[in-house]
Length: 170
Image (cartoon, rainbow, N blue to C red):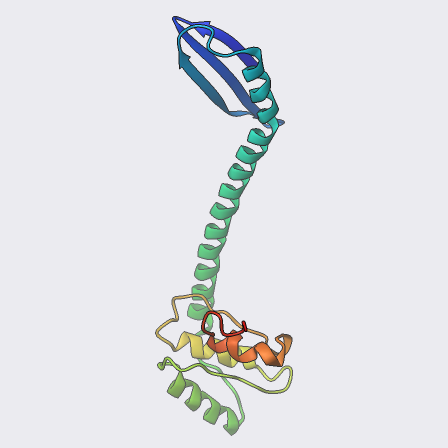
């Protein structure tokens, strides 16, 4: 809704921003002196009402998404720590081969070296990767698993180890 009027020697042009959820903001233009704004100014502001409303509504939604993302990240970190506290960080297995794997996990976890885990589907690569992460200095940070099978072979090196800017351009 637009209001066009003068007030004590000033000209004021106001646009109210509202959605179905109600009033949530506005735009006010003021100028010294009476009758500074014309009806064309009011029409221009009226044309901007919908885009302004959409932009502000999107900003509010974006803020809420960021708030929820941060809350869920905190919840996820808490749940992972609780799971670790309850289940412990030891992998239990009956095979002596697993003992060698766990020795290698303890050996590589404290280093900054990248690790590539390969094996058949279902052998527990994700479990071993998580064990390496939990034994690393970065254990309090996020754990990001990468499914290398979904990455084209030509891009695998740059995806895992990075690349210099302009390396792929002629």
